[in-house]
Length: 443
Ligand code: UDX
Image (cartoon, rainbow, N blue to C red; front, side, top):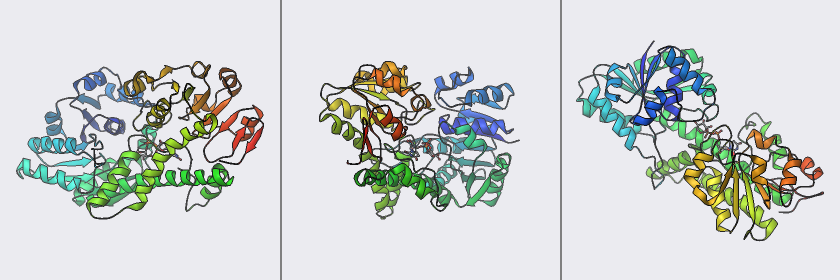
């Protein structure tokens, strides 16, 4: 059993800390946010993540998981300190390391014996070394320590399962001793361990996210070409993905990637490349394609109506993906203002992200947690998130709610044949259009 302090109780910190407690370690999750820590102590989880509350409750009750705002004390008592603070995107696209540096300072000031400092936050290559030098300077070399980069690969919505059954743990360390201790820590997860130096571990995180983002932009570009040549991107993705060298995953065409990682990490990697004088053209194109994809769905509505002045559009889905209330870089944040600028009224449905959406989009939208109420008397319906509630909705009922049976589907949730049979005017991504009874193949 190790004593672990996790500094930063956001998504990554809270999930990782809870999972380390679940496999038997004593974990204190710390944050400077007093309100967040008091809520957690009272059993209130600040984020929506399936299964997290149960696991937090269980481990708190069994005295393995604690919450605290006293970061210095947590550091002094810990064998291993995880840094899991946010690294938001600064104005020039670089990762903002303010919080990481602040934590390194506090660790340096409170070092009272050998400790391993592990970075979980996604940080530019070289940050591990920076953390090492800050701690060295502040602690004046009084105690030995090691720095490890152990990037996080969890996805929102499946974060617990992704952690408990992690596909690999990347451990980039400044010493073999530290690497072995962190490897031991991961034993209960029965995972593949990849041991590297600090820089490679930091690079693995960016390369993994950038590669996945590239797959998405690639299939979206292919989808846009499919629309012009009469091909169906779903069939193309299936045919391509069956080649095991390519793989089926992350070939779902749609309205582009969002969330807290891909948009931020692709921009940060571009900046990392720039900072070493390397023009990374491919990642520039990935980012550009992703931005264009948001406008592409709005173009489809314009294609149907000519202009959106005075039209009312119902939007199904505000969160960047299902099973989360996270709206960071959500397509809705780009698409809804575009619709409003074109003169449309917007009604929006989401089962859980409405409070978050209200904070970010304010009153430019009429919100409802009732899908059919949202669609009622609107001129067209636009799908932005593949919520199961949307995927399995009664499309006949939807048709009766709409002024006209126009459905623009940014997530390709329905079969063309079904939409044709039900008499919808149905536009999706990279697939032929349905015009009521007809299936058209033009743009
Ligand atoms: C991602 C990575 O998967 C995870 O390993 C990393 O730690 C954090 O970033 P997350 O942002 O939670 O996780 O969501 P993910 O399920 O990967 O989806 C990211 C975005 O890509 C979403 O906007 C999703 O809609 C989009 N996406 C995903 C597609 O458009 N098509 C796909 O085929 C897959």
